Image 1 (cartoon, rainbow, N blue to C red):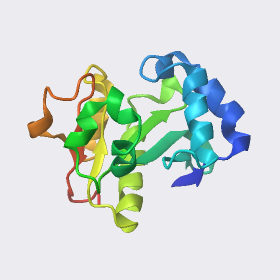
Image 2: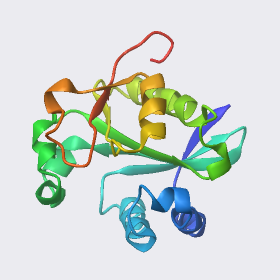
Image 3: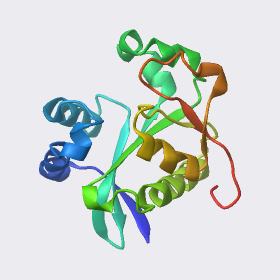
Image 4: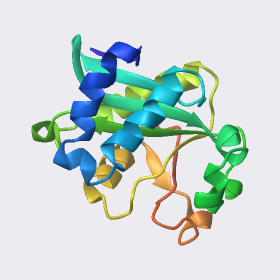
Amino acid sequence: MISFRPVSEKDLPLLSEWLARPHWREWWGDPETELGYIKDMIEGRDTTRPFIFQLNGTDKGYIQVWFVKDQQDSDWIREYPWLELLPRNAVGVDLSLADQDELSKGIGTEVLRAFVRKLRREGYDRILIDPDPENLRAVKAYRKAGFREIADLMGRTGDCLLMEHQDTEGVS
């Protein structure tokens, strides 16, 4: 059973520990900076919605949904000019498994499928994800979850591979 609970202030020590782990450090930024972003989210200074995902009631990782229109209207556009190329009504998703020994076991794919179903029920039709193209494990998991590269944006998004969820059988 996969569930999602909003991140609260009491989760910050746990997230701080996760962000410092080597498999997170490889793809996420500086742990203190990233934790600051999450604090901004839970305190309402950023519209991104952060969640802890759970399997059978046990915390297993982090997932967030961000709103393209809000990022297009923010300082992020200077660092990521490709945001202007995205549809304003789209949302983006980021996730990481807490424990390295659970990578490549299909957990991320299943969590992402469940989160996509949640987002579709909430009315979001354009769901994106933007892995580093060198993170082959993530790209493979995202493809299994129904995401496909956005051909028009290939080579135009710096160190991100923009992928959009395709409404595939059994996923939405």
